[in-house]
Length: 415
Image (cartoon, rainbow, N blue to C red; front, side):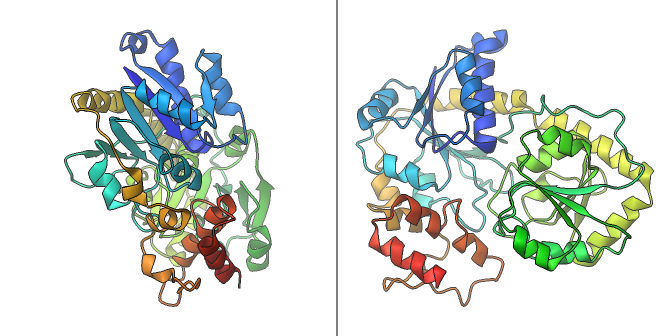
């Protein structure tokens, strides 16, 4: 069975899970017997080679920036096309501008789709199968399901002697406010503990803004060896924008796998991962956050109990073996269906501005005169429309700078 994965890039969680799937199919005897062959097409130039090197190490070739003819031939020779889908501009540039032959289409959706960006309803109806990456996104439709996109945690050691005697708090992940809660500093400032600090481990995108809002941050920046930093903390203050687009939340899972106790808001995605008062705490407001931090600072035994529970739970549930098993089950289900033509232009549109709007909740906010009406949009929601990456208008304009409509919308935001 030949599975062709088409992905915008091989970074982050997508790169991890796909490289592990390929690795297992070539090295694990029980998986070799299934005779499943994975081929990876990466549509954009990779910024990092980490996961590509893993795939190449087991004899598989990653096809980067294929020509139209190359991609068509790969599709023809595949049994299943697995579209690793989120609203990345380059994905539309390929699938909406070439003549795609008949396919069995499996869409693995790597956003939660709850708020923005969304999955176009036409894609849900046209695909042979749609798999979400979290149960929070799941819709009870005959051709849908969910498979958690986890590549496992073998490189994140379980800590037998982690220090729980005193609290050490951190945050791991992006600091763009479409992901990090825009009021994050207010939550941190609510904590009234002498010398309280939070390590910010990740990009420095909003460093200056956060520094102005609080003196309680210690910025570590991007750390290649995340394991060492996770060893240094025992609480993860993982407070995200209530409208964020994430699903798998690899940063959260990686920290939990090493016994770091998460404190999360009651967002739909996080409550599928954290079990309140068993693997961490789910909180609802700033006061409750401060109370939980103070409680853990005064109860090291509880902190250790939660940390051990978190590690065991994640390592047992979110494994590459479970991910692979669920995907295989759906591959065999899908093989009973006939290949057919799918017109991606009818799903997404004919040009870059239509591709962008196809995944927007508030299409009507983007006016033909080049303005964007954000007056009636929730203040936290606005960040999903105006950030510089992850399918925003600014990101589409970066990939299609010649498009006049995108250019006007982008200038409207900048003003």
